Length: 343
Image 1 (cartoon, rainbow, N blue to C red):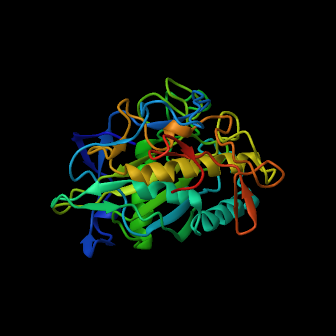
Image 2 (image 1 turned 90 degrees about the vertical axis):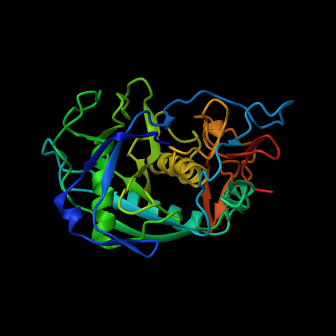
């Protein structure tokens, strides 16, 4: 989740000024980015929490903040962007496995089938202007994917602990997502999200001093939005960054498909998908705890919090389309605990 500061508005490229994309039946011909203050990230080696048993009091329950704070409604369409240039900024050839991309394709196809994890979100809602409630549907659709071969920018990241050259800032990620959305004429609305996957060896920093490689809040991924102030009530591009982190400090520590790097990123992906759905815009804040945690934060641990490893000889808590996954649960207000399946 990103908190936006309106004072940092700037135009991202002349290309986008002349390219049309369509959102909510409006033609958008340019994009603006807002520099965002402090991202809400999925930390590497997060603090262990046990919500497997019902607590005596709903200390950690999610609360809805603010009238008209949006959630993602209807069928949520997911698009994947694999940013895979031929070389890193230093000239090193990119290490990108077709097996890794195939796994992500399989995973995104599987998660958008009917599954209990998505059903956890259906208890959460937005309050509309007339005080009615619109509940999250829990329905996902893998709508498209694109391999982006544009070169990585060479602006660098002075805060990176891995490589100050082979590194992306959040502003780089936002610009590239906006560029590809415009190029592909993909939709921009409150029922669409974009997942950006990057390659092994490319660090990513959030603009506040933290990176995948380290910093105050070293992370596995995060979600945010690219703001578009083009017409009244314009809808931002909702996105997540999913770097190639390896399984060191990310994922659940359980890998039923014996592909730890890919499975760790898959678990991070679920974290960001469901946090985007329940709290997509940050600036208005929909579902959070009193201390600012979201639906995935309450259940994100390096060691799997779920006790429901009932598949693949005790190695998976989900089986979708014959494929086994060990994924972090999501927080269920009804039972005051983390859950793999909704009510």
